[in-house]
Image 1: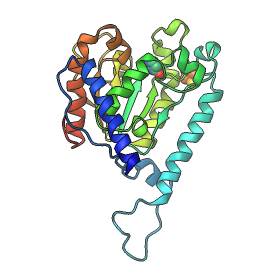
Image 2 (image 1 turned 45 degrees about the vertical axis):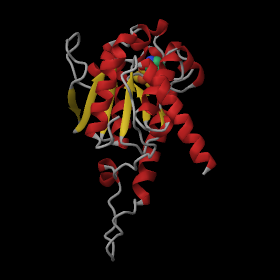
Image 3 (image 1 turned 90 degrees about the vertical axis):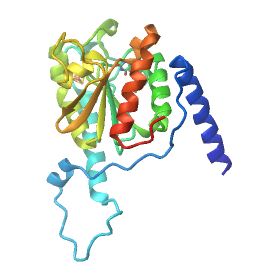
Length: 254
Ligand code: URA
Ligand code: SF4
């Protein structure tokens, strides 16, 4: 009970901070429940379930799919740790695979690791990550209730945008992650993610705030939190985009 109240208090404080970030447009309601993800198509393919002799309890989540998903992600992460498929491996301290909960309905895709991410081996742990965390908690998710990854898994020199051939070399990791998780919604953070998820042509305009799909999964493209740190006036449209994501997920809209 005490823990619950503390958690609610902290969530409310997060909300107030994010409200300040948004220039006071108001973020009144939220929920803290993480939703379980649906069983995965990829796992059903890999591990055909044996015919049950009795009707399965509908609410029960089968154990095998989650193990399949966790295994797939573990294998991919090990492969990324040893990967030398593009030049970005030369400058990395370590590859940066993901953080958060793979059993989620919401995945955020950024560009690539920066200095702090390369040091810690986790995505979005610098200033942009702190802002992303505030966006996530303002939406009503626990910080680690979503899954967060990048287009490329190794830090580009001087944090430059990944080149198309680098993003291309790294693509199997991203597609593997998205295929294992099969979230209900993907948020593409910034132009690089939007382009690499096929949401806009290279250099195309008008991409922010648009719905698209990636392998049958709904994709919302919005501005990158690092951009918002430099141009805070765009936090408001980004919050509109995130509210549209909540609507798509059937969650309460602040
Ligand atoms: N920016 C990104 O796109 N990804 C990170 O992991 C950190 C900053
Ligand atoms: Fe491999 Fe991706 Fe790292 Fe390039 S960025 S070396 S493709 S893991």
